[in-house]
Image (cartoon, rainbow, N blue to C red):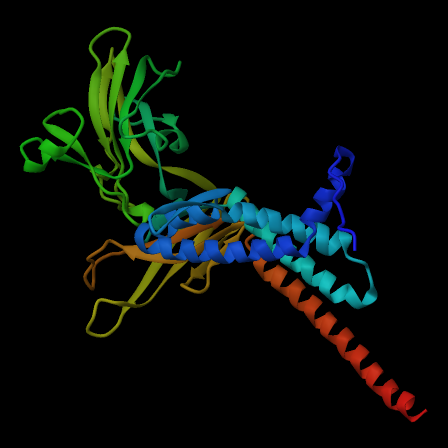
Length: 412
């Protein structure tokens, strides 16, 4: 029997690519690799935390995993899901022969494609942050858990400002601890020079023994000591050395540290202040923030402890939602009953401050998510279940029909 040869001429490439991306072997390999990536990503959470493992293994096209000390290049979860989406679209929906008996499986594949598409939309377009409120407080501002930005603002005589120049978090957090970057803007009469950014750091006095090991220069009797990054990214407290260089006069140096204020909803962070000419300025590291199209007021925070211990038994919030053109809406947000409105979801996440005793006033913290594909996993499950149900009914009817015909044929 002659061995079948493959035509590799350029004119045959579209057919070969179509055959490759629709093959069942490709789907099998992708599913096997997804299992491996899921295993490695889950194990990586133990040492590096959930967020870092998610970004490295599932939000990437390629990942380098060290297996017994040897680097191993693997496709990341994003690439694998993209290939699987193409394989299922071309193989299960385009290539497959359309028959009424296959209607159920066709619908089920649509459901699985919805799930994959929903994952991509979540990765590309969703945002998440938090809002913390004491009873009586009202806000429409959401803060990021882990993204920090540099804000420099002119201050009036009362120390207030209406606008700020912002170095975005993606740019700021891309600066290495041993790197220097200079920024110029027409909005400010000086250059901003960042001499290294540390994802997790703490300022220490030069009189402390550990100051000898800290790199970087001394400013006002302090050095910035770089710390090991926390497993949970939201616990990191970044810091950086900054110089403000006006056209005339000496440069102004500062250590900016994100942990210079307590993370309390009632406290406004105090910026580092300096003067250039007759104008006073403030500079600080602040969490990236954004607004939602309505305000939420915390009317009451209900917190219940287990008897004799400080562990929370239940906590929930009674809030009012305010909009300019709609009536005020009172509602409750509980641990398993979020508020979903205008594309945003408010989950009852946490409470504070830490170490609160019975009788202390406490704040309620909400996780705020804006995910266009929030309900896609649910609807994909519904579509897939309907498809499998239709396929089961078709197979049952086919089997019953054949069973009835079989005795008649045998008798004849």
